[in-house]
Image 1 (cartoon, helix red, strand yellow):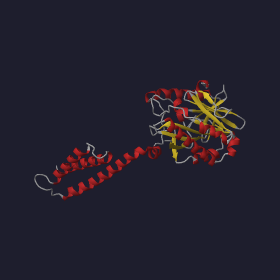
Image 2: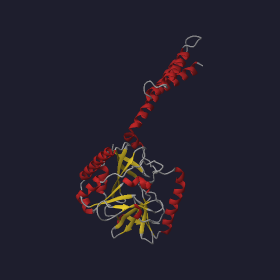
Image 3: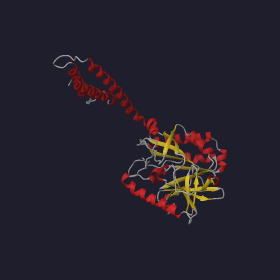
Image 4: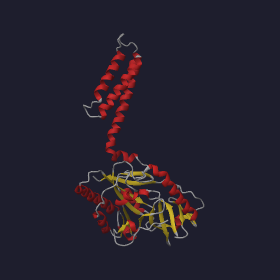
Length: 167
Length: 202
């Protein structure tokens, strides 16, 4: 069992992600025999260095997603995987990372514990990611001492997720 | 009795319509239902004692049939759309899936998670708040800051950060009882971290 994490220092580093093979068998979210570790085994966590953030444009990442999907489509065809495979991507703002995962789509729910806003293209997620203030961490200036135990967010949290069928 | 007969006919007629739409032609379900429906309607309109005299029954029956047909048509259309679930249902389902959990274990798991989080809060020597991310609690022993993971993807319950000069830097995601599930590494691109090598934090 492996978890893949990647630090992108340069746009060319994304080729590694594109060419990495899927780990099979793929997992369906509501498969009772699966667990969360299995669900995230095809998850990618992309951290970008500050240099990379300043150099990479939204179009570069949109092209990267398109290439990644095309590569996975070819791989799924070659491996003869008949199950419907879904790719989904989101911006993890607290960690300042782009994250995406590939699972079997036997069900209509994504494995998130929050409300999700499905978007039709990766662009809004990439835009949010590139515009984030948190690539160098959460600044002290935005943190204040707290007296209460309230863990609820002041603003309701809705996560943008781009979802697409690969095959 | 005429009204009941007419209503029965309408109900069966709509059943026939719905099956006719939902199932392919030639389905064995359609024929008997259709025959019963037609027979009921004919009996209601033209009973053995003579033709129906109350025109009101026909009007009410017609309205009900229209409503029934429209409802049936909408339901069957929605049913067909469910096969194209990516376009429709991903947009409808905006709630969470626990991700491979047996519902029977949910209560027990939740108790453990709550206990772990309460322990973090109790143990914390500092507590800070971010307007959007909520509270962060500092473990006095490790100096790591724990906060709830708002996305809660694939069993990730906490985000764990370390302090640095400018603020808090994410270092790993943890499950409900503090086990690290996704962590940061600095080094060659695409390093694969063996799961067994990940440190369990408690």
